[in-house]
Image 1 (tube, rainbow, N blue to C red):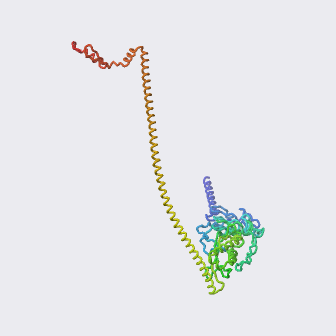
Image 2 (tube, rainbow, N blue to C red):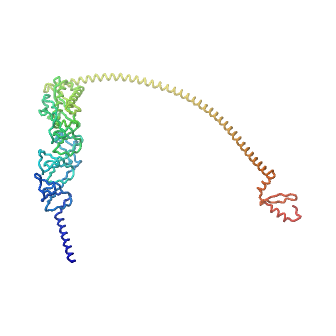
Length: 564
């Protein structure tokens, strides 16, 4: 019986071990740290019509949820699994970002044209596209995450690591929107309703201003209004410098450089000459090189991009044409000699700046300064003769200026000599006044010194007199003090003596007579051990209390008949 029980236990243990081994090696799903497992149910409920994803664990098909790193146990008859890599969204490296200060001229041109992309390892975003699901009823490309429709999800994946089912979703990496310092981001909604409301204002018709402006019919058409947050088009609010995780399917962001920039119309070389030419009122041809310092205010960036498309079109369609037109309109009122003289040229530059600021300001374009850098004056006739006329004009103006400056110089020299003589006279007067003041000062100082010495002597004498008076008073007070102290000591001694006499009188009265008091005093101070007797001869006896006993003994020992 015991043998049978042991055999049964052994069989049970072997069966248990076999089952555990089968479960461990057959049912176990191990997901490494950098992987995820996509599950597919082979047996189970059929999916509803039109569904391709198993949202319920009891349904057959690809499961929406995936398994993260770890150990799991699933029946291999019911489940199948497939290992997939985790989705990693890079965070970028700010140390590799290339900013505007490192761009060359070509890159700046691309930036103004809206085609430039900053270099560097920027943060990434993951745009998620659902591959399985039902089609959107309104055929929208961008769908919500909870809708179950196929298409691009509105939400994006920010930098990090994610467990994403690649059988259901496809991830595409895109750079995040980075707006550096000195820029703003103009946002364009690519999904939404069509803008409603009043149409935008029409652009000014620049076609009649000049023939070289390059203005086309596109700028003359009506401008599309700025969009609201839920509408397609350019939004009024811009993005400030920073990093933004924006779905590129929903919005497009155009970086626009704010602040002031330079725009020049000058001669770079003989082949590239962009100077502005116009006739003066005397028939001479004036060629000027102008540099305009202009910029875009952040609050008008969206409106300007909505109107002109990019910064290059602002230069080509507004600043450039208006600069040429204003130069011609204002410059034709000046004579050729005005552009040679410095004062008139400054007036021309100021008038050009003010008019360009007024015209561009109406279009929300800021103009800080229009600087006239170079001016050339050409005679009406061409060839060498025209050049000689121009040189004669310059020479005549130059000689006129030289003569005028020479006359002014001589006049200033005469004035300087006159002022010099006046200065010498004043200098002599100053020296005389200085000596006079010095002498008067010495007299005043001497008078003040004598008066001070006299006053000091009087003060010393008065002080000595006052000191003597004070010393006399002190002596009087000292004598009075001695007198008072002497009288006080006398009174004290008198009262002490009276008190002692009164005390003795009371003692005598107490003993009844002076003799009794004397006996009391003698008895009180008597000391027998100090009595001594001395023999001084016959008929004489002197008592010395301290040697009384010795004297008595000596008397007894003295032989009879011996004289005392």
